[in-house]
Length: 354
Image 1: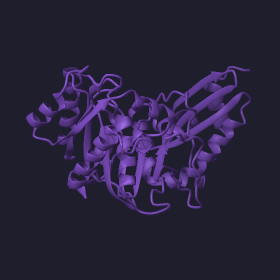
Image 2: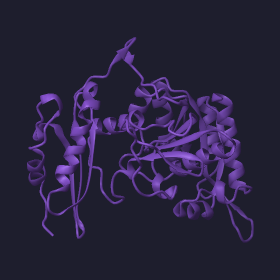
Image 3: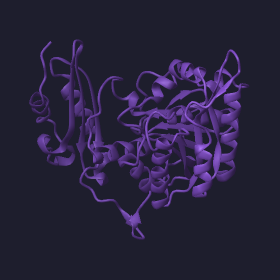
Image 4: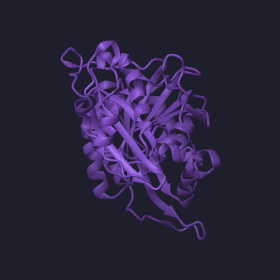
C-alpha cells in the first residue's frame, strides 16, 4: 500500500472549482491535514477555511474535495469540514452574537476541569434520565479530539443528510444524538488548531437539524475537559441555559473544577451546580463503604463558591461495564441506587431551568 504524503493530497485538491468563480487555493485554504497510513489504506481528514457568510455556498466544494481525495490511490476514508478560520465574530452590544439553535428550548453544558472524572458518563446518564422523565432530549458530543459518545451510546455509521443539506441526528434510547465521532474513523486523530475546533463546533449546531423528529426541551452538550477553545466557543456562541461541573472528591480534581467554574462565570454562563462523581465505593460483597478518593470535597467546594451542590454518584464497576457496552446504567438498572442518584440530580437541574 503506497504511503501518501501531504503534497499528494494537496495535488489532488488543486483541480477543485470553487462556487461562483471564486478562487480556491489548496495550500492556503486547507488546514489541519491529517494522514494516517494503515494497512487498509490512508485515513484523511482536513478542514477548508472559508468566510463564514459564504459557508453555505461552499458546501458543494467540501463534498467535491472529499470526492477528489477519495479517488487518490491508497485512500481508505476521507473526512472534510468547513471552518471559519479568518472571520471575525459578529458583535452585538460589544459581545459576540450568539446563534439560535432552531427547535431547542434549553442547552446545558456538562463540563469538567480535568479528564477522567466521568464527565461523559454523567452527560449520557443525565440525558437518558431526562428522556425517561418525558422531556424531549438531545445529546451532542462536543469533544472534537476524543469523542466517546458513539461508543457509550452504541452507535455506529454516518448520519443521514436531508434535501437541505442538514444532518439528521441519530436516534438511540429516545435521544437525538450527534458526534464528530460519526464523521471520522474511531481511531483517526484530530490534529486541529483552535479555530478549526471552533468551526467544527459551530457546524454541529448550525448544520444539524436537531428538531428533525420533534422540538427538543433540552440539548445536553458533553464538553471536552479543561477551559480551552471548545468551552469558549460554546460560552460565546451558543445561548447556554447553564453549565454543570463534574468532579471527583480529591483536592487536585477540585482545583481544576474551580477553574472551570470561574471560566463560566467570567463569560456570563450560569453554573447550575457541582456533581461529585466516584464519591465513595460500596463493596458488592460485604457492603462496606470505602471513600477511595476522599469524600465530600465537591459539596464543600460548592458551599464555598456559592453554587448548588447537585449530588453524589458512587464508584461502581457496573457504571464502567454499562458505559463500555453502550447501555447507560440508568437504562439497564432503572431502579438501582445510581439511577436514583442521577434522577435526583436531573430533577434539581430541571428545577432551575424548566
